[in-house]
Length: 315
Ligand code: ARG
Image (cartoon, rainbow, N blue to C red; front, side, top):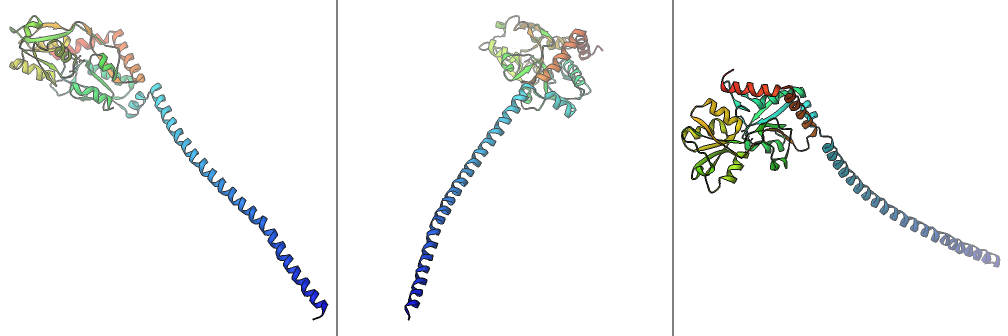
């Protein structure tokens, strides 16, 4: 081989080596750049998933806040009236054993003073009226559970009841509780009830009074229904006396000559009011308006007179 040829081969070899070296030299920083890019991307994707989970948390909090806001709104601006109107029917709970406020007449209809007031409230709301008859002691629970829209059952507002329901303005005042006995078996003082049996309605203020004031004196027996059940047990001699409200006491003794009001116990107090769900301000407004109008127009007195006469069979 000539020198020239050798030189050429050498040059070619050198060029090849240089070429490879240059290529390699270029590829290292590229790789590094790619690696750092990759790292950057990994970090970015971590950040993205972090942001995503934060967003999720925020949207959960948002949902919770929305719920709280709507609950608050409901409290401030309750929609009881709206719901009753949408349903087209007012559902009133009562305990139809308490003439002349609510009782079952000969035709099997539930009638009385409270039913007349309920009719006026339904009219004001421009809806139909449905009466649900149940045990007096079950009424507050039924109202709390939304089974009924309101209670009209000659219910007296008491501090304990006010803790779980709201009350309208009262629609009459009471002379106190009437203690009824058979004629000829009258008792004139609480002490004379010593060792006797006294009937009261379960869940009423009369029961509360008896349990407080007759303990260690008389045996207090509670019943679900007053008329006719409690009147019957009195007449049969199962109990010696029954304690009821003054108005019902009055009409019971007028219709049954065997019975008499032996005495009043417990003192004067507010009579009945309409019980509505707690916070149902919109409904309370309507009920109070109706009661107020009935009282100022004198119509409520007419309702009382009519319903008492109706029960006594005079009209
Ligand atoms: N006024 C009493 C009370 O609120 C008795 C009412 C009983 N009413 C009836 N419908 N039985 O406890």
